[in-house]
Image: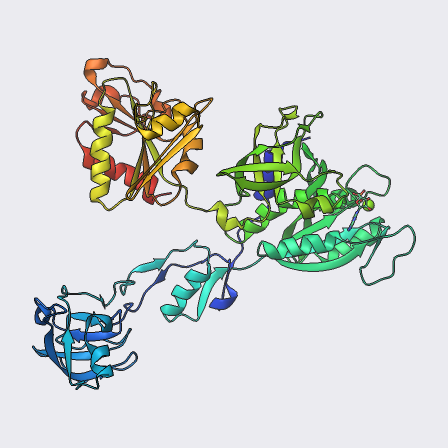
Length: 595
Ligand code: AMP
Ligand code: MG
């Protein structure tokens, strides 16, 4: 019996990224771009107005107010889609609509609401003049040529998964087709003498073939093209014939016929026609699962078709599909993130696991008070497909454990989160570590200032060993917490603080979701024992040794001579103490841009 990871490695080593195809952009949703896309135009192509209003020279609005407007002569009008005929000369304005090109001579647009147009219209005044009611800064409401996309720039990189917004960008650049990695064709065969098609009446002793439909739907969901081969009977001949029909696909998935029963012959056929890679995996449900490659001779060429023989039980077949077929399909499509998106959740029921296999429990995940909770969906028989219908997650109970107790934290694979969620940008996080008095805080301050200068939104986390000094004695928040509240939140117009009592210290990984999105970079001070990227500040007056072992460090900052520290070639990059710009460049390049 091999582990889930070993089994997945074997499956993935037998599937390749498929060739690219060029097709209409609307058919490319979810596919991976196989070429770099450069812009041949500027977007917007011309300076244009972001508002309905008047195009004018900012200079001509100087000191304008509601009580003393500046009056300009209206010399024309320009709508989106047409070109202005007239120029804006000093003392004049042109009425302009959103998206219309900015007339020559104008540098600013003042929106209707900041003019006297409405009152002029209602009092039937002359519209050949307009009163400007406020002073405008040059460039106001003007969208500059090329401000979104500049001609010649790389806009979408090869490898990008095309979402609606990427498809829109392709359209805005005037591309009607794109080169993408093609979708894999997945042949699907159900096996078993007991199976009958859904369009037939149900005779005694038979059951409807449901696996074909679950599997085909899952293939489509993950971007493949299902090819249904029907039902194979429990005989070597029937299976061999049916399997042969599926061999021009990119992958073959069968269900049933892989356990130890007398009629379970999928693996025999696989052994005869190809090579078995494995057929039992240390997981529950889904222990009997076969994988191998079937050899196919096409003229003079030999082809190997990966074959995944899923167990027949509907739940087992679905769960093994998720663990092995899904990543294989994604890899063939050129995707890089193959893992199922997961969350850490508090399990609400005891889950027993006695046979040292990795258990996938069907659970319902809810988010309550900012934390995920998972409760088991009831009876977990591997024939009960309704346990999957109720579930939105699979709690993964490690083979090394005896199960989980209610209240434990468990990892849950989210069934319905798109694979895009797996690609959700993780907030870049770097921690500055070092001995006490090494200057960690000073480096933090310098880095924060440097990243602010570069336009980043930075969050900082301080690891404090002692008491926290923000819960000031005598303040209302302190009074609330003295009265016994477990958390106190203080909200003001420009700041929010949340102070919560804990019964144990949180890891930095647990702190990150609390920081939430909306930042470009999180800089932490301390957390030397965590596995996050760390940069150690080393000061020669505190000794030659480092606090952390160099293998666990992303970089070292020191005021000692560099040579003493870089003797060993495997050591991380070393920066000079005080060279904040170079350190920030390193962090930016390694953790922010190059993820
Ligand atoms: P097997 O792995 O062939 O021994 O099948 C295990 C269990 O799954 C048996 O109870 C089968 O009846 C059931 N089963 C197998 N294939 C299907 C299918 N295509 N649809 C629904 N149930 C199935
Ligand atoms: Mg069977």
